[in-house]
Image 1 (cartoon, rainbow, N blue to C red):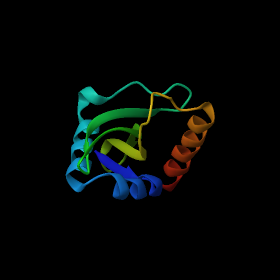
Image 2: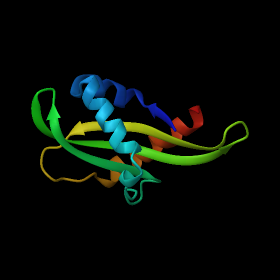
Image 3: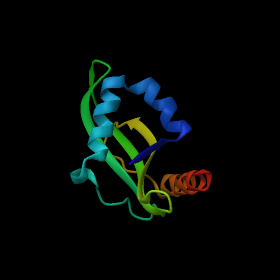
Length: 114
């Protein structure tokens, strides 16, 4: 399993999570039971909502990631997760269609880099 991070995710992670909390979130995403359905019209982006104590305070976070598998001549089937974005949730508002489109575009850009 390969885990990649976008620059946006990396910056938000530093601001929002301790190292221990980040490791916990990684384990949650890597858990086979955590493979949640894709966000509609996102091109395969998934969302993990996590409620926990973040840097000493109880908060609700949304982690957006992209999961894919592909064949590689050296390693066979490769599983890859790209962590796209993390933010604190305030209320129950979902992603707008425009936000989903921008995330889908970011996934395409990341796939071209790899």
